[in-house]
Length: 72
Image 1 (cartoon, rainbow, N blue to C red):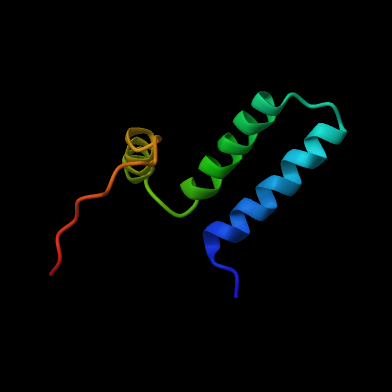
Image 2: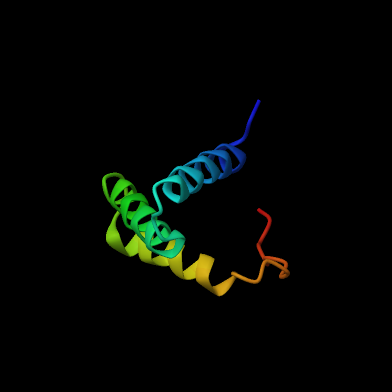
């Protein structure tokens, strides 16, 4: 069974390939995808919640950092 992140990656790879076939600039397409993804989230979550999620992702872009968390 494919997990949500792998499924998203697969779909994004296909979408990026489709955009390339139509000579759409990859950065412009990625920005359009981000905008559409944020609109999807907005249907289910508050703007503040989305801001918090995006801020977390931006702070951890390098991917080499362990995430501190508390165990119950």
